Length: 80
Image 1 (cartoon, rainbow, N blue to C red):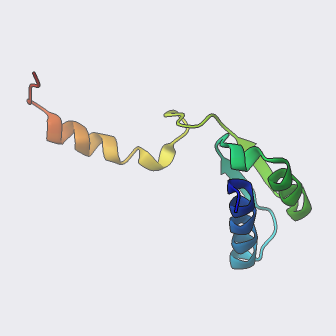
Image 2 (cartoon, helix red, strand yellow):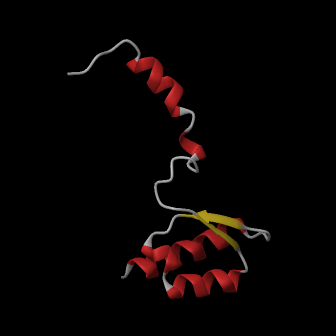
Protein backbone atom coordinates (compact mmCIF):
# COMPACT_ATOMS: atom_id res chain seq x y z
CA UNK A 1 0.00 0.00 0.00
CA UNK A 2 1.29 3.45 -0.83
CA UNK A 3 1.42 6.13 1.80
CA UNK A 4 -1.30 8.11 -0.03
CA UNK A 5 -3.63 5.09 0.10
CA UNK A 6 -2.96 4.74 3.82
CA UNK A 7 -3.67 8.45 4.27
CA UNK A 8 -7.00 8.08 2.43
CA UNK A 9 -7.88 5.06 4.56
CA UNK A 10 -7.21 7.10 7.72
CA UNK A 11 -9.38 9.96 6.44
CA UNK A 12 -12.28 7.54 5.81
CA UNK A 13 -11.90 6.14 9.33
CA UNK A 14 -11.88 9.68 10.72
CA UNK A 15 -15.06 10.54 8.81
CA UNK A 16 -16.86 7.49 10.22
CA UNK A 17 -15.65 8.29 13.74
CA UNK A 18 -16.82 11.90 13.88
CA UNK A 19 -19.93 11.89 11.65
CA UNK A 20 -20.46 15.63 11.78
CA UNK A 21 -20.21 18.59 9.44
CA UNK A 22 -17.99 21.64 9.57
CA UNK A 23 -14.69 19.80 9.80
CA UNK A 24 -11.49 21.86 9.67
CA UNK A 25 -8.45 19.65 9.20
CA UNK A 26 -4.96 21.01 9.83
CA UNK A 27 -2.16 18.97 8.30
CA UNK A 28 1.46 19.33 7.33
CA UNK A 29 2.77 19.23 3.78
CA UNK A 30 3.80 15.56 3.81
CA UNK A 31 3.54 13.87 0.42
CA UNK A 32 0.61 11.56 1.36
CA UNK A 33 -1.40 14.59 2.51
CA UNK A 34 -0.82 16.39 -0.79
CA UNK A 35 -1.28 13.41 -3.10
CA UNK A 36 -3.91 13.82 -5.78
CA UNK A 37 -6.11 10.97 -4.52
CA UNK A 38 -6.00 12.36 -0.98
CA UNK A 39 -7.01 15.83 -2.18
CA UNK A 40 -9.89 14.32 -4.21
CA UNK A 41 -11.16 12.51 -1.13
CA UNK A 42 -10.95 15.67 0.99
CA UNK A 43 -12.98 17.56 -1.64
CA UNK A 44 -15.58 14.76 -1.61
CA UNK A 45 -15.87 15.09 2.19
CA UNK A 46 -16.18 18.91 1.84
CA UNK A 47 -13.68 19.51 4.63
CA UNK A 48 -11.82 22.79 5.07
CA UNK A 49 -8.13 21.99 4.84
CA UNK A 50 -5.47 24.25 6.35
CA UNK A 51 -1.94 23.51 5.28
CA UNK A 52 1.14 24.56 7.19
CA UNK A 53 4.81 23.73 6.80
CA UNK A 54 5.98 20.51 8.41
CA UNK A 55 7.72 20.96 11.76
CA UNK A 56 6.63 24.57 12.12
CA UNK A 57 7.30 25.38 15.79
CA UNK A 58 5.04 28.43 15.80
CA UNK A 59 2.05 26.31 14.73
CA UNK A 60 2.62 23.24 16.89
CA UNK A 61 0.43 24.50 19.74
CA UNK A 62 -0.05 21.02 21.18
CA UNK A 63 3.59 21.00 22.38
CA UNK A 64 3.61 24.35 24.21
CA UNK A 65 2.90 22.76 27.60
CA UNK A 66 6.19 20.83 27.41
CA UNK A 67 8.64 23.73 27.22
CA UNK A 68 8.17 25.37 30.66
CA UNK A 69 8.72 21.99 32.35
CA UNK A 70 11.74 21.30 30.16
CA UNK A 71 13.18 24.72 30.99
CA UNK A 72 12.72 24.05 34.73
CA UNK A 73 14.30 20.60 34.45
CA UNK A 74 17.32 21.89 32.51
CA UNK A 75 17.72 25.05 34.61
CA UNK A 76 21.17 25.49 36.13
CA UNK A 77 22.71 22.58 34.21
CA UNK A 78 25.74 23.06 32.01
CA UNK A 79 26.71 20.86 29.11
CA UNK A 80 30.15 20.27 27.65
